[in-house]
Every structure is written in C-alpha cells, then in structure tokens.
Image 1 (cartoon, one colour):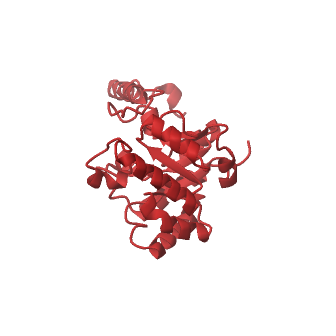
Image 2 (tube, one colour):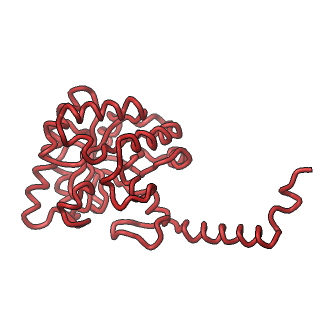
Image 3 (cartoon, rainbow, N blue to C red):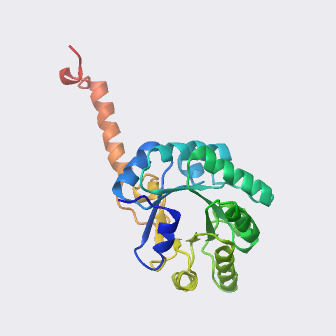
Length: 264
C-alpha cells in the first residue's frame, strides 16, 4: 500500500472514507499501521488515557514529542499527526511556529493538530506559510473544557453560525483537514458539504469524510467509561483481567512455570 501523504488525504475528500485512530506507543502504532489505518493521531488525550491526568490541560510539548517518536518508529504507511498541547500555540504566532516546528523536527510526525476556529485563523495561516501541515479541530475542543463547562455537544442554537464560521476560517487559513467533535449530525453534514477539505468526525455522525476514535475506547480498555459516540469493537479489559488472574493463580499454585518453560 502506498504511503499516505497530505495530498493523498486531501484527494480523498468526498470519496473513500478516511480512517484515523489514536496511538501513544510503538507496538500500538505497528498494529494500527499493519491493519491499514490511514492516519494515526498522537493526541493530547495521552494525558487522561495513558498518563493518568484529569484532562488534557497538563500535557506538555516534551510529553507529546516523547510519545510521538515511539509511534513514528512503528509506522510505515499511515500519516502521523501530533497534537499541540494547551498553551503551546495560543500565546503568539511566533510561539506557535516555533513549537510546531520543533514538534515536527524532534518527533518525526508529518502534521500538527491544534484546537480552535476563527481565533486561530492567523496562527494556522502563519504555520502553513512555513510549510507546517495543519489539521484544525473545532466543535468540542477538550482544551477549552473549563470555559465550556465540561464535555458538551457544540453547535446548537446560536452556536450554529459560529461553528460554520470557524469551519470556513480554518479552511481559508490553509488547514488541510478539520476534526469536528461532538457536533449534531446534520450540522456536520452541512459543514462537510460546504468545505473543500476533508472533515474527520468524532461524535459528529456518519456524513463526515472520515472518522477518528481513541484506540483505548475502541478496545474497551477504559472500563465502563464509554461516551455516546464510541462503538466498542472488543472488550479487552475483561480479557486482560482473566489472563492476569490466571497468571496469578498459576504462580501462587506453583504450576507456572512448568518444565516446558524452564531451561535444562
């Protein structure tokens, strides 16, 4: 299979659906890449999902680079996108370019993702002007949860026109793709049809140009936590629980290791 690139993703607009999953380590990246996923997002969701933070706010540039390096080493075909964490790009355009450039150089990722719509227009444009590919992220933006008052569906009532404005702004600024998170299905469909760049939905219905899920949600690795928009394709939590209990039982009873697992 051919290597996925920014131009090849743009060419998929309105055609074959784009697949995206998160990964935060080398073995996961190898599995996803071999399975044929188009894009791997090293999300700042690494904070709550892997590092035990309460949300994405504490995640640092250094942590993002560390995890992305591991993912890149396990990836051959998929395009790898690195999330820009909270306050790594909001301070100034120069700060955004400096951090985005560093993150690409030191991690090996091929694009950055940042949150925000119209307010990020000039930042996105400046980054694209120095050849940094940018994926935008609008709707529910997890770095803004304190302002939003939690994880809530966006784009209802008077927020509809604002979300449409945000979508147009990031496209005009030069983003090559945009994530729509927790947006009503019909609005996501309208935005997808309106834009010339691909839309990637998460909790935004089936009419986007592609979909993204957190790997751990897809495999049921986060226990009973399951947002409405998640489809769980396996329940590895239960499988791992059974395996670990079997291991504990065999070790304590003396049946593991047996002769076949011993050297002679």
